[in-house]
Length: 146
Image (cartoon, rainbow, N blue to C red; front, side, top):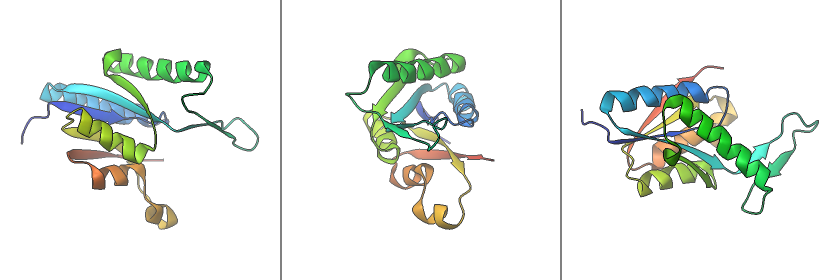
């Protein structure tokens, strides 16, 4: 097996993201690879709201929202020993932006989390499935249990 030189872990801040990120950190250590952390900003769900309101997040959003997202990502990176220079926020659709980022940064392996999907969720697809089918590099899908 060839060694990986650059591993990308895509995180979504779910309660499982640390499991996925730790798996990527272990692989990066094993392969002595650069490890990058990516979070794709699309919308911020606000579950504490009565109706589950979603706040659109874009370039014109309140700076405090963006700063909170940056801080969260940098803190996760720090916990994993990833420098803040290798922690990236990008805007867009996660399914698309993860593979574009990997192409631009010469990533050898993308690590994403995946839940087992059934029924309609399987038909609609998932971010992990889209990354798997569109990436130009290896993809490790870490099975997550609810």
